[in-house]
Amino acid sequence: MGTKISKCTEILSVLKKYRVKDISCAYGYNCPDKENTIHYIFILESPHVDEIQNGIPLSGPAGKAAFESIFPSSNDSNMTLGKYISEGRINASIINISDIPLQKKAYETVEDVKDELIISGLDWKKIERIRKSGSLGDDIYSKFIKGSFQFRFNRLIKKLENDNYKIISCGRFSNNIVKKVVETDFSKLELIYH
Image (cartoon, rainbow, N blue to C red; front, side, top):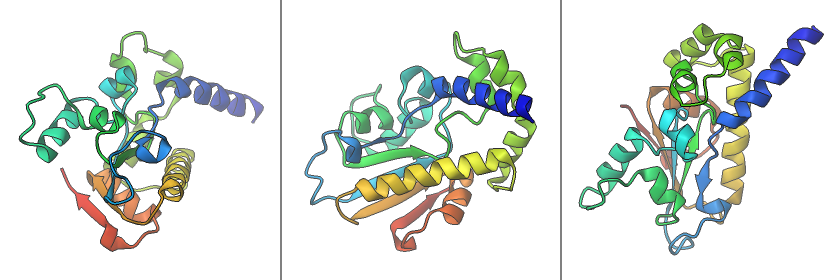
């Protein structure tokens, strides 16, 4: 048992360097008129290659597509929703269900990130099954994903100065987890399937 625990501890310490923190006006970013505007909370699956490299959620192709769909008249062809929110230009947050990548490819493709401990030390079939089904079980991966998300989401809600917020969950995985984990007035929740 001691060997398993030390390997888990070692894997968790390595995973920390791939963590992409949530971004939010509630955590000190400057936001325009945050008392009188609705706060949008975007919930997504997990970071991928661009997010690891940039350290900002929604900073890759998905972030660019999201920005263009929300701000179609913008002339900034390089802007992503993650960057826009991180600059404090909109009263919003981005929180991933998992703040570390849930796809093996993210660890294999990032330059200088090919970490054997991660690639060989995790049960990627189980993680992929969770990711594709959007269903959390009683295994260690499910408990970690659920516990981490629940803690970060509840911390965010407590930090908001009022209850004038809208939750926008993006994708089947996120939607399934949000419906099971988030305790909220469901009129505040919008599910987007993509």
